[in-house]
Length: 311
Image (cartoon, rainbow, N blue to C red):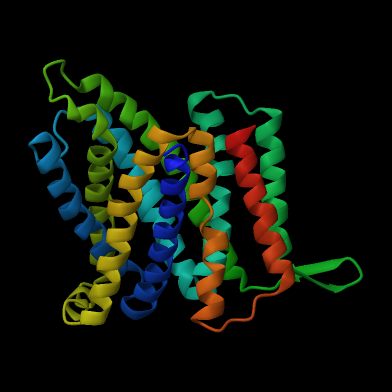
């Protein structure tokens, strides 16, 4: 099938849309901190099983100290800071606007790549940033009188959304450094599948550190009672299970498969369609009224994301 990669990429976008919806539900039912601990703990179990079946070790074997260091940093920035912001953003403004603000991740990654790795910021990247920010502004800003504008959403939720995009973008760059160190630490006699499963092993390291980070925050807040309560909440546990399956397990697995069958830029653009796809369940299931400017803003923002990968 000539367009298999594009089809898989669309399935990934749907998978991440389902993840966002269940993450929203879990955040409201269990709380941001508890949802993240459960999600990352379940991800560790699933990733361990995947690695055990494919490379014979249920843990990130061969990773050296530098790989652990950089991947740990990416987990603290991307998971502990970024996902804490994202899940609290869901509590404030919902998954629909939260996912829109997550389109800031590519611009943040481009800036972080320039600052940390010395990567060049091309005119295409700068144009893509401007288009993405314009789309977000169209969706979340409202005109009061004359040339005075204000946020049409709670400022707290908007700031949390910006923090989530920043965390994911910078975390991505840090994980790129960590994975490079991981590749260099793999011996020549390692199982042939190890290189292909490297993203899963790297994700497991990030999940371990992320879960530990959230547990540390819960300890500081003396809030372990919420985990005990969550263990008796079947519906909340179901939400946590679903966002884990459709996110780190199905989403990551299929995203890796997608780039094998089509151009990485096309795959990345199609997989980033979550802010568009999430509109439909909010209209059909939640009966929310979507304003025309919000749809226009999403389309413009997605055009900016596409420019990042295609220019």
